[in-house]
Length: 410
Figure 1 (tube, rainbow, N blue to C red):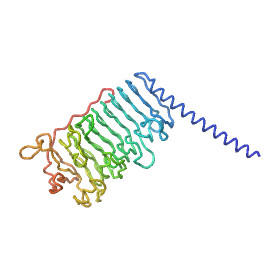
Figure 2: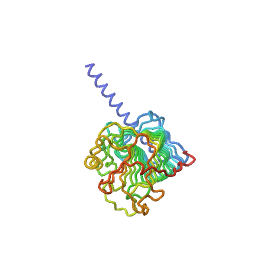
Figure 3: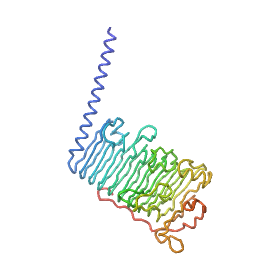
Figure 4: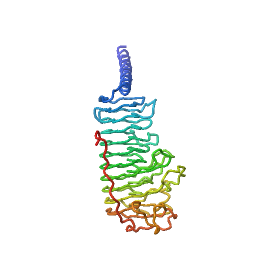
């Protein structure tokens, strides 16, 4: 009888403890939401140490000079594994000079942190991740600034995104530095954006390490003036787990750097190591075989300068999956001797002179890359004239200027 009373008491105590924890989490969520709504311009939202289970997005709108600050990346953890409302963990819209730092956002239904139409956004010492094995049901983007100006991402880390871990889209004046992307489909992606520096990052174990894309159907049509330098881009051989229909679902596992239909891109002083399919790929949008219905879209890469990188690759077969995988299996047949730098050879005739040579400024220049073999696969002519003549690309383009951000960030 005494034992039964003690057991009943213990169970009752457990229920009370559980109820108190649930109440505490609900109170924290209300407090967080209230701070995001009521914060005044120029103030700081301080999030305490602890792991907080949140079920609703935190939304900051129309504010200026706000810092959202945790107690440290390992100490302030916002988990959204039971998210019932909204898609993002943190959403920022129509703001100016916002800083998000020293915290972790986990397991959101959609994007971990999405920032739209904001002038001046800094992410610093932020971890965004989906825990567990990478899965197509994970949210698309970890850090996701879109249609922003003056974007700084530094000392951040992204894991498990089913699209891109660190993504900047349709934005201008961008720096991504000293950050890490692991086990995403795309590690770091710059899309339809102008004036970006991506440097001193690690892209390891993704499907594709660093992507620079221009895509059709977007408001900001043409990106470019992107520099990718001093990065470690290593072993990006993870199987592609993007949902079907996403453009990154076409990225072959084993991709180090891919440049797709964008212009004025410089890739230099990187270590591009053991990416089994593409060390660096330079492709027009026509390689995707998707129809183009956007009349203002420009589908060719021009003004590309790949130089002074170090390439290393173990002898292994490239992927056999997807459009590019099929190309390797049935058209290129390189076996285990895959060239490090692959150019599709699809050119815009309007950018060529009467001798069918590039007009100044539009060249594809590839030079002084250690350990690299270069191939033009002549995709425009159904791979009829595959050439390994590296001298064809032995040229240089003027270096692009360093990106300078606003005084609150740089």
